[in-house]
Image (cartoon, rainbow, N blue to C red; front, side, top):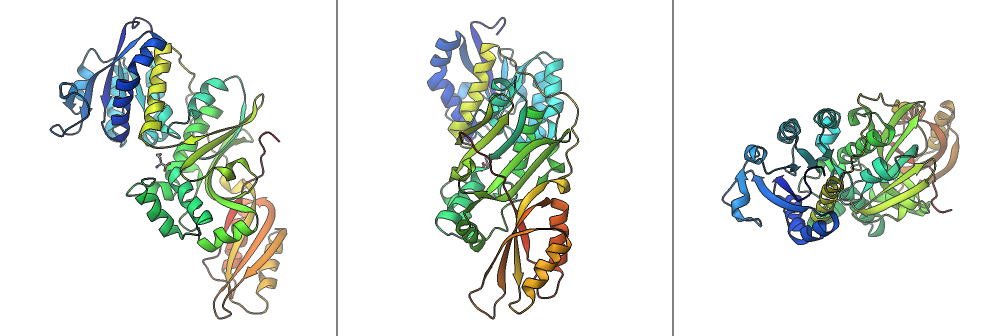
Length: 430
Ligand code: HSE
């Protein structure tokens, strides 16, 4: 770094699990960074919400809030790990305006305000880095922005939320119900006490929108994406999918279609031979397909204090090395309309058990020009509703939705009928 060849002062704001792990990393591996980059990394200020509690850093470093961190002239780089959106945005805006580099792991902040903050960083000639905001310790942002910077990226397909992957893995492998699998994920520390934003897909769609903004060169709003969580997935659907050679995964997809970026997150049936089917438990993976490199898969722990601290420190190391990746072009990208996306679908109709139900369902699918691949029915008790599973050939989303609405409204079909999308096959190394 120009003019900073001797030392670099870090102002850390937030000393929670990731902040604490980052402070530990600097303590344990600071010497290694010094040897590798010739720069001594010094933690000079640590801002916390409340003073007076025992902390793992020297008491002399601690200050309340972030103002004193910003005001300290020894702070060259602000590391924001406080969480939330409003305060981090104020802090980072002030830090960039003051000419300080900023590193954050704050996914919600980047998803909401990444464009504004990156533009501000450019204007002030400083770096704003956020590797830890997507997939914890996996260097996916670096690969997209730097390693593949001379490729055209064609698509991103990933499992970018560990909580839901853990839940779906337990449902598949232990036949657990959704609620039992969620309770186990919480007990084992893989799910937050309030897992709403993981389970409903918000976390995943924010991550994929960030990756698409970087890969395809225009900021995407996750709010306009196709986005659905795993709350409705049942143990018997998981069991049926397994019998048919699929595993359920919360899939995040990004690609360019007709010059527009498409961002989508949904629970999908993934063929057992697909590279993402083997990604188990709390692990994340992102498959990147680009024109010269072809498909590659990055896999690893996508959350947790040490993996996330590793990414924060990697951003710091890149700052020390002086590399400054290009950002996406300023300006919003209009998203491809999700109702035009095309998938194979897996319909699950809940029906009365009487003559004529199949004829009605298949007739209405035909009316919507949907071609059936296979039909399976399962019922244990003739007095109970039966489960009718129908796999269909690729069709546009709007047609699948229209067919579902028409069939759900037909006599003898219960409204809890729904569909899942089937992830297209993709091979790596085939
Ligand atoms: N809660 C997220 C997950 C990690 O389960 O993957 C933070 O984005």
